[in-house]
Length: 134
Image 1 (spheres, rainbow, N blue to C red):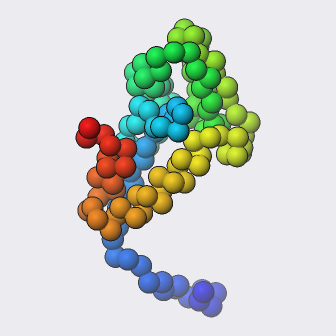
Image 2: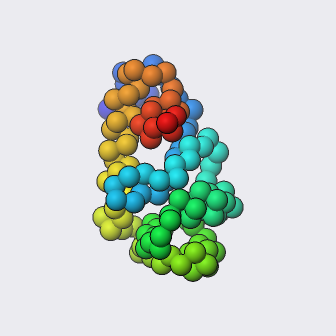
């Protein structure tokens, strides 16, 4: 570190990336309904993904475990789940250890970091990792 009040200089890779995010479900260790996006997540955006991508990808009733993200409109999601015969299980705040998809996200982040040595953009890394081109 640098003395108080002075700039800290660190070696950086020189590659900068625009923020890219992903939302997906997970069933039996496999990602389902992945969507890569550049905008910020909002309640409306999430509900639309949940309704048009995630629920149609679930062919049989499932327990849908959700973290406590601030954009999750719990009452709307619960109603959508009931309509499709799923059970909605919101997790308590700050409990990533109870959410199985958290380990998958950690693996995804490592794989994307490794893939960035081979492909020019984060979007292409995510596409390759999730096999969206199949």
